[in-house]
Structures are given as structure tokens and as C-alpha cells.
Image (cartoon, rainbow, N blue to C red; front, side, top):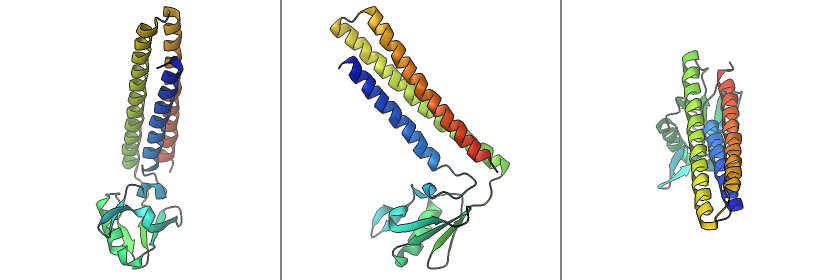
Length: 186
């Protein structure tokens, strides 16, 4: 493995860690209705667990209500069961044609609790980024022994690895601060 390959691989892994963090943030509930919260909901459809968003149209009605319109009206009961089972903290209301999820306003305590979750996701991401840094440094050390790289080259590349790590850690912190601000906004 070359030095460039180490950096390319490390960069890809760090980008994936940040992308995963964004995905987790999308499913964290804020005060507004967000269809992304339904990404993890699976409905029993002909014996197979199927993502809810593949079986229905989801729209935001008034900023606080999600309207779920199943393409197949016969599965409305299964959709309701899946929403209750997903434990979103919201009870589904059905009129036989559509299912409505009304998001109640968040209490201050709930907002603080959600912020703790946001911080935990951020810290987990930063741990993943540091693990990637460690792996990159290990690869660099192996390369140093295999190709007799000079100490200056190794030190220079370790500095580059650290800069890359700092960049992605800072990105994670900024995303976290943005999400916390969104959660705390009433």
C-alpha cells in the first residue's frame, strides 16, 4: 500500500463516518415533522419487512403533521402497527385512507435529552474518526519498515493524517452544533 492509498482510504472512511452521522441526525426528532424519521420503520408486507417509505407517500402537512398515504389501502392496519412498534413517541391517527402523525411540541426537558443524544452521536463519530487515524498511522508505520522511508517523510505524513483527522472532527462538531441549535429552537 502506498502513502497516497493510505490517505485516499482514510479520507473515504472519514467521509463515511460523517455521512453516517448526518443520517443518524436526520432520524432524530426535532419540533418539526420530518419524513426522515420514518426511514427505520418497517411494515410487514406480504410476509416481508418493507420500509414504510417504499409502500406509501409521505408528506408534511402543516409543519407538525406527517401524512402517510399507503399505495395499497389494505395495509393501513399494518402501517399503524409498524408505527406503534417503531416507538417514535407519537401515536398514529388513521381515518382508513391515510395515517397522520401529529408531532406535539417538545418540552424543555425532552429537548435537553435529545441534545444529549446528538452529543453522543457526535462523540461516537469522532471516536470512529480517531480509530481511522490510528489505522492510517499503523499502515504508515508498516510502510516505513517495508520501504525504509525516512523519519522526515514519516513525520510529515503523520502531520497530514492529524490535519485530516482534525478537519473531519471539526466537521462533526459543526454538524452537532447545528443540530443542537435546531433542536433547541422553539
